[in-house]
Amino acid sequence: MSVIETATRKTARKAKGDGHLRRAEILEAAERIFVADGYEGATIRKIADEVGVSSTALYMHFTDKGCILAEICEGAFRNLLASNSEIAQRPLDAAVRTRMMLDAYMCWGLEHPNAYQLVYCPRNPAAVPLPEGAADLSRQCYDTFAGVVREVAANGRLRTGDGRSAAQALWMACHGVVALMTSRPNFDWADREELMRVTLDGMLHGLVID
Image (cartoon, rainbow, N blue to C red):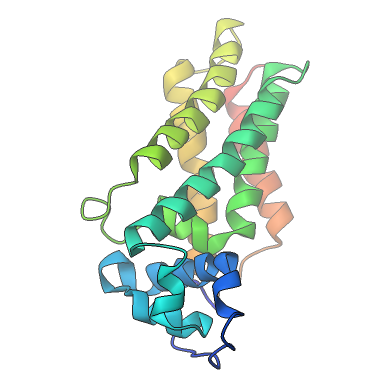
């Protein structure tokens, strides 16, 4: 199912006692519906119908849709932060670590298109701000990445800009790759791995002095 298709499929109602063991399934269904209908258009009933449980069973896991959104966003950023932190601490050249973090970011986004669209491409960001915990994790993710780019800058290896502008430009470019590929799945894209490689080669070879 495309991340922009409306989640209209209703599954058969699960047997009593089965439905309320499916927290992960609820989160996955909510991701699809939040992306398709927007946060404001999503309802607990829609999510419950998509999973195949009653609204009452769903409320045993989450008190409201805000709690569901918070868990989806926080889970996404925890995974990304763990990846960034692990790469940042490796005893490797800063430019190599920068590339690895950008590659991991794109891979994560393309492998989790619903979560990516929900977190980074909401229909109306002003109407649905990130939950406080997710916003903090998001800042940590970016700060960890930007810290490695600042190492590149501190070593005098940037052809243009400084650590701040270089980190933002690199992130923006990789975001574009993921956002377009996840929101335009029917476009005749080149091979995913090749697109990622060409993007990183073009950016880093033009920006970083070997």
